[in-house]
Image 1 (cartoon, rainbow, N blue to C red):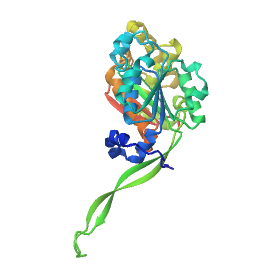
Image 2 (image 1 turned 120 degrees about the vertical axis):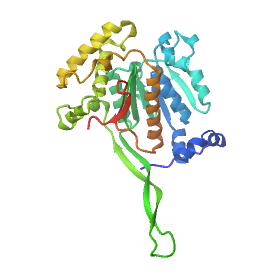
Image 3 (image 1 turned 45 degrees about the horizontal axis):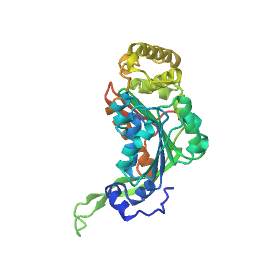
Image 4 (image 1 turned 60 degrees about the horizontal axis):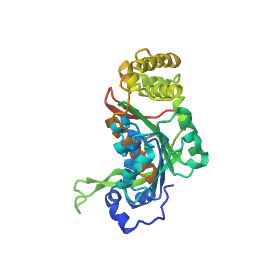
Length: 339
C-alpha cells in the first residue's frame, strides 16, 4: 500500500518546497523529506543526478567516489570547481552540492565500493550507481533487494546513455482522468453533457534484478520481434559494459582509433553470440561513445532524478525497467527486459 508518512514539514520547508507540493502533493513531499539517497560515481552523470535529487528535497544524500577529479571531468561535472583537480571527486563536489539546497544533509564517502561492507548500502532508502563494472552493479543490486531497498543504475558514454531501475515490488498512486455524464439543465429532455474528473488509483509494479535484465534470452519470440523495431541500444550497452569489465576503464578519447577497433570487435562477437542480424548494431553508434557529453548527461541524469522522485514519493508510474538514449536517432525510450 501507499502509506502515509508521519513526518511533518516545518514552515521553512513548506515554503521552500511550495511549488513541488503543488505539483505532487504534501504526502509525496513528506516521503521525499524522509528519504536517504546514495549516489555512486561523481562524473558528469553523477553530478546531474545529485543536482536533481538534492533540489527535490530529500533528507540526505551521500556522494560516493574514490576517483580523483581530472581535467576532462570539468567538461560535464559542474559540482567540482577547476581548482580541485587532483582531489577526490566526491569531496570536491560537496560545497556546491550543499549550496543547491541547504536543507539537505550532504556527506561524502571516498572508499571504493569493493572496500565497503554490505551493511553500508542498506542504510539508504535508494541507491543510484554509475561508473561501475557489471559485477559491482549486480552485487549492490542484490544487497538492495535482500534489504528491500530501491536500486537504480546508469551510465553515459559520449552521447549514448542508459538507466536501469529495480524497485522490487513497488506500489504507487496514479491520477487518472475519467469522463462523467452531467445534465446541462433541469429538463431531462435536454442533451447530456460530459465533464472530466480526476481520481487517484493505487497500482503495483513488479521489477526484476539487473542480472535478469542483462541476461535476457534473445531466442524467445517476444524478444526477437523487437529486432524488427531496429534499435540496438540494449546491445550497445552490453558492449560498453563488457569493455569496462575487460579493460577496467571506459573508451578513451586519447585512444579513439584502437578503442573503436576493440568495440567493433566486441560488437561482432556479440552478434554471433546472440544470433543478431549482421549490421543491426551500426558502426556509428559505437564511434560516438568517448568521454561524457554534458547534454547526454543532462538527459539521462534528468530521467534518473525523475525516477528517484517517483520511486520515493510513490506517485505516478515509474519506468520499468530500462531507459535508453540513442544519439544516432536522437530519441529516448523505455523497454522492459528480463521478465
